[in-house]
Length: 167
Image (cartoon, rainbow, N blue to C red; front, side):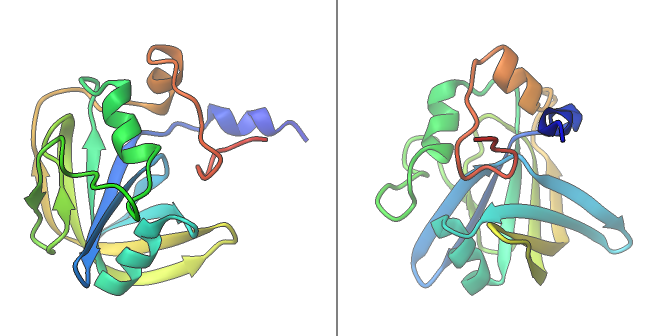
């Protein structure tokens, strides 16, 4: 099998975040998609080992922000290469609260989707969180940052916890 065929699938980069029991968490994911239009529903894949997965489960809500092309590697590293268990990811890039009570950074994002959790599917290393979109906002006219752009232009690496990671 040629696993590189999976690299031909298109992806974006997103920050998914939640807050429960006084803990804020967020992480960069490359697997988020709209799954239905009526009701508007989205799915995100989060590694089970990420603090964010537990916080989403406890909050029963999450917010997805679409990272735009103005983002740089320090921004992506802030949300993608640190743990919410030991680091406040919302300190340096501002923090606002979505309609579902999730924290989010308004910088370097072009859209926001606030979701109420309706289902969780265990797919092995990751959990798929499926949510009804209760608020959606276009935050800028910037182009979304694709995973291809992240690799080709920003020279970003795929972390081991990413759903697209290849050893």
